[in-house]
Length: 158
Image (cartoon, rainbow, N blue to C red):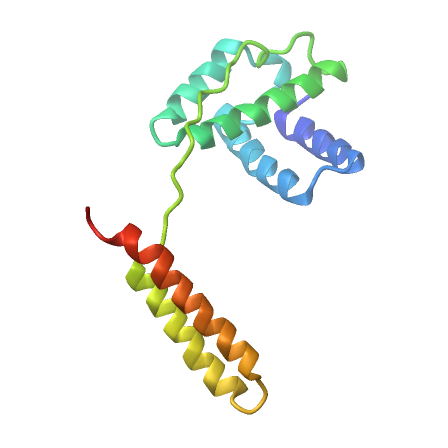
């Protein structure tokens, strides 16, 4: 069975199992990359060494989280092919995922928060001048005060 045919059958099975369309779409991208790299050869001819070479060739350009996603796809596809009897052994069985560190989220600076609040106030005044209540205006001002009080001391150097 060709890699492309294995992907089509796998995707149909996973849709039936209720996988998210977003997961299927993301795995489809990985499947196309796999087909391009191996030139759509027979899936049973791919070995663990071939998969490691494929991962090694793309390791320099991928973040660890992207590499982990690629490996999860390959492990899932080859596990399914083995369980369905399309291949005699699972070549992805011994491939390990890289350790993925936690990324620190990007925070808004005090200036960016102030800009967002001012922009919201301008839009609010334009759209809701006659429709919004004093309560809504008070909530926006409270948010602005909280942002200044809570974020201000953090943003100031020690």
